[in-house]
Image (cartoon, rainbow, N blue to C red):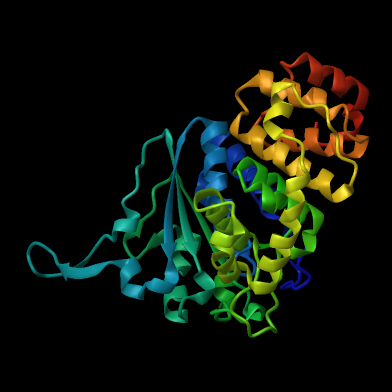
Length: 370
């Protein structure tokens, strides 16, 4: 995890942030506790670490868990002026008083089967005059005469001053109104998330082999290109949509990750030419098993990537589990553990496969996720 912290607040990976916030909000909603009784939450962390993604994933969790539609209103405060939050002043009907037109961001669905998340992103990068306008939102759920609906959750996120990014010191009056959590990089948590999002097999394998490369951010380095969870996701999008061939995409990847890291990735992916046929593995036609550790890492990531795209075909998954029994035990365990993250609650599908149940009885004690 990132060792640069703001001190005196919990440091969590994005996955754990989702879990504790889901538990807090789900229990409040199930018990009919007013959401305004809970503190607004501030997520701190370096650029590209997954703070915004965690909020959108939390919205998906709330939808699935509570069977309610969850709307995320994403407000980038760095783009706002104080008047943008309060609205535009105009005269009332008899021209005796000024009234404020409600900003569009406050036009939310107030239905009981809806949850609204007002996400004040980049709050630490906003000028202090805008941060001041956020005081009422975070505590009173209102700005001027405009009130947020009862079904609204308020969350905020921003970079730390120590990150040398655009960030202003948060006024203590505002800070004291918030529940603070610091978000940090955790390779294992990111790997599990990456499987569920279909991150490219080259990147899954490389970062399993060299987890320290997931985050190369250094606030003391003046370079503008560095690797973060966000940049690896962008690199995956290029590999998935443009080309697998590094001759076609090397410069694009170097522009996201930096030349040095893109070169390391290219060198590592040469091992994929040594893999057995992945399609034949899933058809039950392949018996060749490599022995070299780097090839086994690559094989595991390729099998996970193939399984992600065929996760509803349990016959193919069954064949891959039979093949996994021929792998060295450590790699077999890693593979089956990764299968659990192909989608939410995928374990329930795996339990329908007799070969997985047998494997579970024999080696399931090693899967701490079960």
